[in-house]
Image (cartoon, rainbow, N blue to C red):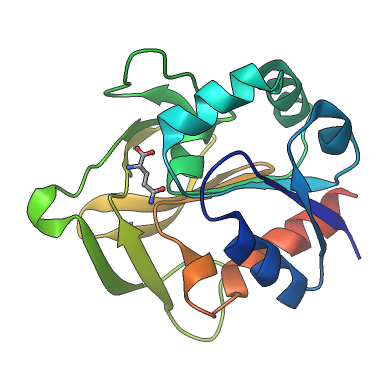
Length: 194
Ligand code: GLN
């Protein structure tokens, strides 16, 4: 099985470890550069993107993460993880850095106060067997994408899932639903890259 790490600085790490194991990956927590060096792919969980970026900087992980992503390591970001994979954040908080990897601009907390958290079904290109249950928690959406980015899903008029080469990102949290088809899709990407 491919070894897939979960960036374990803050956020819903445990749920991703479980989902990855169900999707036939060997799942591991990644907190240090040495641990990053040992994984075939990486999930960046939901949580708080500014906190994750500050901790990544503190743990000496920002540059190693940027380098591995640029070198083609498969990576999957959910929610805060999507924000971290964006080349640009529309409304960054001060001190907030991104790792980049996907040529897109994201808007944080995009769905607005009345709609902070909600669930809805989402049709995702490449996921078979019907729509996935999308859990959105103060979720970002994608404002715009570059020509290399494939839009995999939209909710209303807004892009909520994208892929560019080895980088996958969703506004929503499949790790919270028990439906692990998004994780299976990502593990397939890791296998294909290995
Ligand atoms: N709103 C959070 C952020 O800006 C993301 C929320 C989430 O990951 N559920 O980082």
